[in-house]
Amino acid sequence: MVKETKLYDQLNISPSASQDEVKKAYRKAALKWHPDKNKDNPDAAEKFKECSQAYEILSDPAQRKSYDQYGLEYILRGGVPQPESSSAGGAHPFASTGGGGIPEGFQSFFSNAGGAPGGQGSRFSYNFHFTDPNDLYNNTFHDSGLGSDFFDDMLNGARSSTSSSGARRMRNSFGEHGMPRRAPTPEVTTVERPLPLSLEDLFMGVTKKMKIKRKMFDDTGRRTTTDTVLEVPIKPGLKKGSKIRFKGVGDQEEGGQQDLVFVVEEKPHALFSREGDDLIHTVELDLKEALTGWKRTVATIDGHQLNLDKAGPTQPGSFEEFPSLGMPMSKKPGSRGKFIIKYNVRFPMMLSPTQKEQLKEIL
Image (cartoon, rainbow, N blue to C red; front, side, top):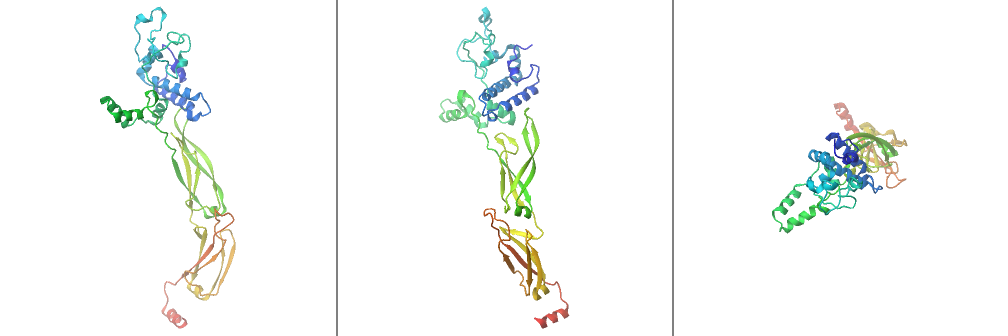
């Protein structure tokens, strides 16, 4: 039977919980009480600290065994019990000889009559130092650790207490109370995805529904994949390469959730090609039509009919421009580019000797 269950109660588990269950319980509690997720809850930071300190002891099999046998006070004093004679008269067997207070985050554990050695108001000294809750959180969820520079600075400080540069690096590596400084929160990354669109979509403007998959942490700390649907607004006249950003909708990572950017791509069109705000249509003519004349009806992208009647000759590579029948200008609402018709003359692949003689006489 364990001496006390305060730390187990903190993680909402039983003293018989496995090490894997201890870790899962900590992940669930840490995610629930993390200050970044509870900015409007002033008690969350303390809850986060308490569950982190409970996990630090229970996740270490040796510390957990000592806690089960002797209780939390024994752990906080560095595992050194006071001589039996000092506990005579009902004093706590691990009562301190003075100095220091109960570490922050565990005051509530010793607030009852039987919990605080020496009674309320007593002072204690402790040899056990807890890891910064944020460092413990990062290490547990992301398998991160202190870099080699940290250990180099420790060694330099141990070898030479007169090394000013080593001491300066040591001071920079530690925060208040000698705890390691929290590494800066990494910036949220951005993920880009292509968004292929037809020329008609870019001409008219539409709202595209895009189903995406994103990875999240559930309440137990496990990585899960969820589906969500985004409505992507496409403004009329948007160009290839345009970017549409959605903040905080991608995978969950240490700094938050990824931003997602859709990059516009144009699908090939059977009749038109695009150059900026202009639309281009090519009319194919055979040599006879180009020389003697021809008629065509050409439709623009919005269905406007253009009746073309050319008596000829039509020069290969020539073109005509029709203002305000091209693509909408996204930065100039109500304005449109040009509709350009280019003429391509198809020459015959071969001529008979008779045809050649006839052409020589005509031309």
